[in-house]
Length: 344
Ligand SMILES: C[S@@+](CC[C@H](N)C(=O)[O-])C[C@H]1O[C@@H](n2cnc3c(N)ncnc32)[C@H](O)[C@@H]1O
Image 1 (cartoon, helix red, strand yellow):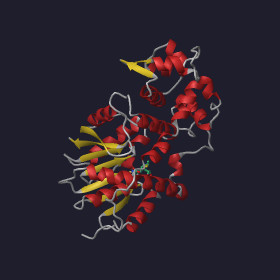
Image 2: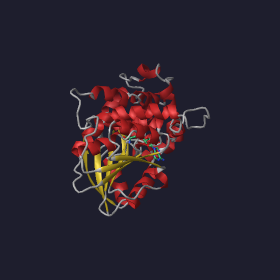
Image 3: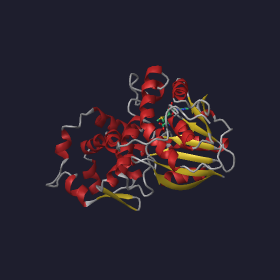
Image 4: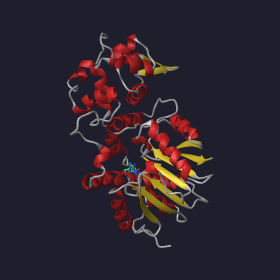
């Protein structure tokens, strides 16, 4: 077999963790600021509430409210007893007006930051920022149909994936598997890295135009074209049926729970019995108490996409409902990891 031109099995010499962390966690402070601008913590101290009660009282939608409460629990400002959220002593002392240690005014000069203001809209509409009725606003999915935006977004995913994909590929046991379908593949860096690490596999990169063309060029440049091909399509319309491994890498986190359900059902319908599904992403833990950097990253996704970082428990339930047998979560690098599931 001819080796790929780029060694996609190589790891970097140094650790880029802090560089990923700044980018991933960037929006969390704006969500904290938004909550303080509504004096949310003072209200919660007086009214311990379930997520549904918080949503009803404040007119919030469930997806953004869940991301917000997960951030606060993860920071130990709020705890969840049963299904009721209460302020912790830290939250009561530093986040409630009336306390001599209240830090709200320290954040007041940040209230008008554009992202903090967006968060109030996202909490109230449930729609990603820019989708809330402003026609001129940014629509990520529409933008991805434009060549220039698709090229720069795909480059962003590609450079991030160069490190994450080799780490994932090294942890996967794909013995006895033949052909991988990388769904919403972007540049194809995951398909190429997995094929490089597992030389018996072929792979299909599945994405829509113009990302398909961008991926095709990169796959050729990396010397992977003899084993990695591109198929163009809309994943919501169905998937090729000739693969025994499916990969959703950083795809499900862009979508709300109904679309995740739909995508898992489509994957189930296209895999053979015993087929393997890999979800590669940043996962909240099962009891939704961390990790902090994933709770922070989820703020960015909640702001800009229709999704969030789902918990391992939420994925296990959705996978079971779709007819898969979910496996344990496994870590890779920089707060990412994967869950495997077998098609029943
Ligand atoms: C966040 S990127 C993830 C790219 C890559 N899997 C990774 O891990 O970096 C989401 C990808 O899903 C693709 N996508 C979005 N909607 C899609 C659809 N309906 N059908 C196929 N691909 C889609 C986008 O074009 C984009 O490449």
